[in-house]
Image (cartoon, rainbow, N blue to C red):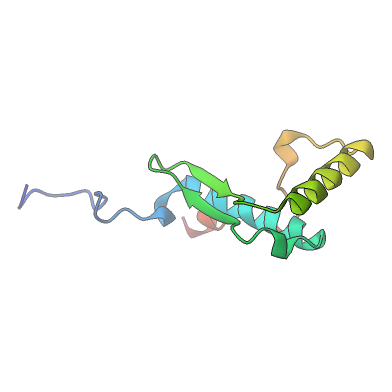
Length: 106
């Protein structure tokens, strides 16, 4: 109601920059983008983007790709798995140079 004090965060002033989900999605999208560039697939994922759903959960949208791109991605994954590459789920996306800007701004 008019004249009532607000905490400064209502639906009209909400921003994705206040959301941990947004930063998680953006950081994951950046990591995937960098890997796709190294694999020469940067032009094959034109719809790659970070997003939030209505609940504030971060999402990475890969978008539609051609059958050739899907086959190439599948082959890269097969080769990585066949090479005996063992990666813990916790280590995925972590690189020595990666930073979490959300934590830095607090």
